[in-house]
Image (cartoon, rainbow, N blue to C red; front, side, top):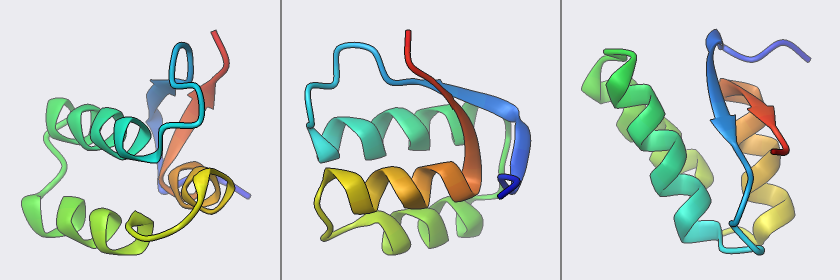
Length: 68
């Protein structure tokens, strides 16, 4: 599956299963790449309320991830 924004990379280091941190890190990366606010809110709506695995799946649909 190709993410919506191939040019945006989110690093997973030091998250330790923290879904809020993963969502916040992804939103920050989207903002830094000048993604429109409505799309960032769409991402947040999709990502909220799941366990870490579910949030990670949503993140991978939006951006590239790296484990370091």
